Image (cartoon, rainbow, N blue to C red; front, side, top):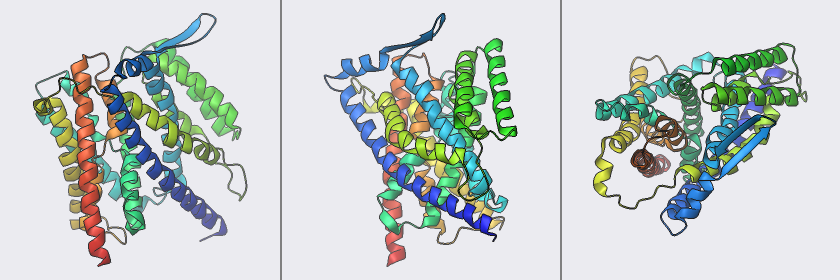
Length: 402
């Protein structure tokens, strides 16, 4: 390997170690924020909690203004920063990360594809005759990498590094699939003027990239304009974050040269892991359980989500991997076996953040009962998947050590 190639590999390795550290701790904070939201929403503080979410925030200049309740600023604004980080990570993985070697793409990419299609099919089987419920068909397609790595971190250093790497690669491919789903299925009432302005902004980003502009401020300024245009266009505003992340350059090839994408990724990672995602979880996981009975969990929407995430993910991820291995089209990474792979497929059933986000798009403006229904399904499915995966993987790791 050349000296430059070695430098790139070391950078990628260091970024990956930092990623695992932040994502694992962030996953634990996600759980804590969700538990606090559930407690607050079912206590005497419920009114204060709802008032916090509905608090109007008005940002404007002259006749131009954006006025939304705080919960939508969190979901449309702060989550755009999360998707900016996703875009940066996607670009890094394809340029110098796990997907730079095309031979390593097939296993995680096909597992992610199976882990999206099968859960969606399972959900659809429960809700086929209800057109409103079918809006949520993509909810069980998601995997929450922060939550999943948080569960893995509880097992300590005994977990094979290859398991973390494969889980991360599947989640990256899964995020890409979720972005495509949001772009295609959750876009409505298009404003051609705003969409045209967004396209102009994207062209501006392309020009900055083509002329090798390395100033982050230039990209962020154009990206902000693009976000506003996309917000007004009818396409979900978080997609602007992904586009911006893909255009920000990785940086110079020489050691010590400017790397705008890497520096922004390192800056955003702790903010996303420790603030944005926990705040999103706090704002979206607070479900009032008043009047809820066990029979409500047997309704088609939560049942479809639970079956999709817990059962569908295992069938989709493990089933595809098993078939590919039998056909000898791929090989398991060193240190993994089929049982550990099955445990990984359980971890993929932790949908949580992305599932809640897709659910908020799917059932936006619907009645309170639907809001409670899909959130209950996601929380229950993620909890079951986390407990089952932790118990199974702990058992398997102990067997390996024995």
